[in-house]
Amino acid sequence: MGVFSLESVIEAFEASTKDAAQVQRETLRWILEENSEAEYLQSLGLAGRTDPESFKACVPLVTHKDLEPYVQRIADGDFSPVLTGSPITSLSLSSGTTQGRPKLVPFNEELVKSTMQIYRTSYAFRNKEFPTMNGKALQFIYGSKQFMTKGGLTATTATTNVYRSEQFKHTMKDIQSQCCSPDEVIFGSDFHQSLYCHLLCGLIFSEEVQLISSTFAHSLVHAFRTFEQVWEELCDDIREGVLSDRITMPAMRDAVSKILKPNPELADTIRDKCEGLSNWYGVIPVLWPNAKYVYGIMTGSMEPYLKKLRHYTGSLPLMSADYGSSEGWVGANINPSLAPESATFAVLPDIAYFEFIPLSENSEDQELEQSSSTSHNTELEPVGLTEVEVGKEYEILFTNVAGLYRYRLGDVVKVAGFHNSTPELRFVRRRSLLLTINIDKNTEKDLQLAVEEATKLLAAEKLEVVDFSSHVDVSTDPGHYVIFWELSGNAREDVLSNCCDCLDRAFIDAGYVSSRKVRSIGPLELRIVKRGTFQKILDHFLSLGAAVSQFKTPRCVGQSNSKVLQILDDNVMDNYFSSAYD
Ligand code: AMP
Image (cartoon, rainbow, N blue to C red):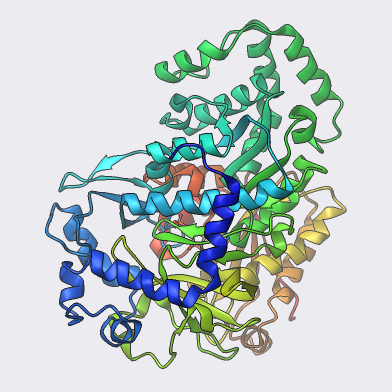
């Protein structure tokens, strides 16, 4: 793809959303024709039919677990058409932080294509309101380890697959945001060294930087927390023109040393600016005066980092990036001026075939992990893309050309409105329950709200929750909820004891409240962990092949994640039990 015009991208998007229902039918036909040779489809008796009715009648709803045997065969080197017409030649590792281990999913060039389509679409809309000039981007992006499966396929995270692709490089040129850092930094195998060099390259090109971004907001906050620790060393490097000896990887050293020249003037400016800040408030616009906005996924499990991010960005706008997954993309943020808390994603009707399972308010949340292909008989009838209703919540399903058919992504979305005839979705939460002991039901969102409520008690102490997680402890009778907090400093015991009571009271689900009252759930426990504990959890996931770019802190840690639970437990400094229901 050469130079492209923003108008043509918007026109194509407008055209495909005018009659989204028709585009969906064509997209389904295209996917089923492309993959008509796939063993999976053939076994379901579609016999060449490509209409939505036959498709729905023949093809069951599936979760990742149902597809695992097929993906495993591919990984083991079965080059017959298993899930797709043309064999899958590489796999992606999805973050899988909730399950405790990354999951393998099919990857092909079509996914890169749809990723670029999403990037261009949201950029075209963003650029109308917040134009960026030809310049650079300080992107905190990181490739992850690549490994070979038994069958000789490469497997790495989807973001790495994308960053390595030629299409990505072309698109980035098109959208005028060349990364400040050389590839050796992005793909360096030591995350800490890459992060340091990203910061250094960003400072070297500080006048040219037009935007600051990362895939998920977590990496942005992590980067600036690190900046607070290493800024003086960065200044020294710039002053002397010599890279810190903490960078030991030869390729990274060479590549960064080429762009690092002694610049005492820049070093002095950075020092003055940093020393002039109050508690790092607004550091980003101060150091990158030409940056127009900060960009990354800020919705869903990233919301807890917004407060800290706003502290660093001061008055610079935050723009929430698009919605998708390793398995495939869903929608683009075409309303960039909405605050991240209200961000919506317009579904692109030509990148996949979408269906939505309506969730009624009292609908029992099935444990996704337990449902299997027999969910064929589910009483909840999925509806089509254009049949969803504004204000209602749905679990999202998609079918795409990378070999996923009626795939339950595990996310709950709410329809905020329509753009032409395609819905604009708000991300609500992961579908699965996080905390449940008996009749209580609490999701990731409920936990987030409870933590937000209790955190207010810390504000007066000028303390923050750096990160948090939870656990259901049923080793005691009755079982109880455990919340882990890493704090930015030391808090008084009475404050933390109040936070603990507040957390307990903040779970307002009727099942929890009644169980607490009759003591069939014990008092909530708040465990305070040492500084750096969540860094250890990140390092643990990286050692399993996860990517920083896709990292999401596991918000609930169970036995399937015993290593993480052990890290948390080994670092507990204090614990408190709630007296909220005494
Ligand atoms: P991964 O497993 O790394 O491919 O992550 C995919 C998951 O990340 C999705 O299923 C969502 O739960 C979450 N996610 C991706 N994009 C967004 C977004 N824009 N807002 C909220 N959550 C998102």
